[in-house]
Length: 217
Image (cartoon, rainbow, N blue to C red):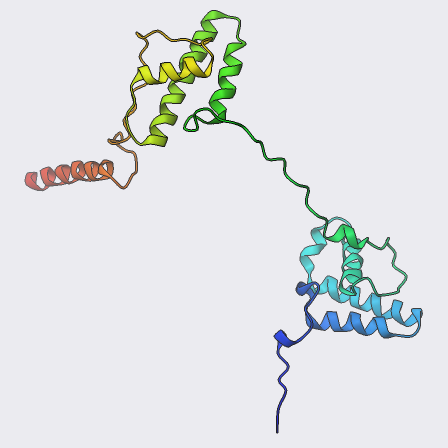
């Protein structure tokens, strides 16, 4: 004798799984009732049950409106009842997302990124010479940080100044005597939590203090 087991995987897919299989079956049953009076009466019972099963929806504006929309969705828009709210449109339930307009920029130096090019363009429009010079040096410092982050190596200030001159088409210049921010990612400052030497050094310092206290005792 062959037994057919009723697994969820063999049942029709639930349209709104949060309401469960019983609500889905009741809505399907309401769609088969012959008179609208019967359908309206049963639909109201199901609406009350849906609200009881999902109390979190009570915090949503137009709580009842949301439940009636869900009733139509569960029935695949086949239920014919007198709804107190407009029937939602099928296309409005799962709207197609708008295509994103991805920016297409030709970046001359990828390790500096497009942001540096934007900052350079803004700096070129600054009329005040002192502010322009200050902005130029800030950009150069940022370029140096981006360079070291990308290449994981040190870089001469002259390289950054030359690249800045090229990116700005010669409009932003820094003298060779200008000193950019010193960067050294190989030896992080004390207190910085890394997997490398900083924590080890800090721990060694703590161990030495503990050893001194033990000697005193």
